[in-house]
Length: 94
Picture 1: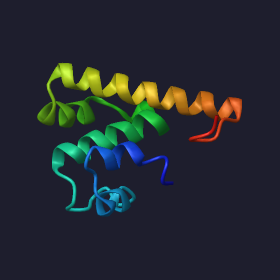
Picture 2: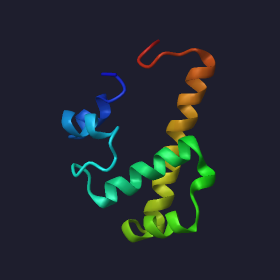
Picture 3: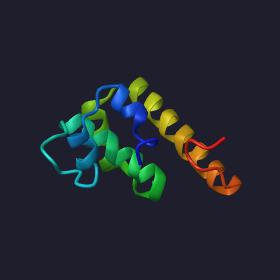
């Protein structure tokens, strides 16, 4: 788990916030952060649940350009994670 969150720690994410990722409703996250995390979770697990209502929530916190940037970032990480799984590459492995 240390490798997985190394970049987050370097960006200033605290251990408390990392631990709170499992409880999205935690007050540790701003509404904007919760929307971004939920978007990433839905992209990874069930993108068909990203409906008009959810998009309305996203647009309350992010501009169109930010939503595109967030979506591309999430898609890149999901795709790389799946490629690593298919190839049997462990995080941090060579």
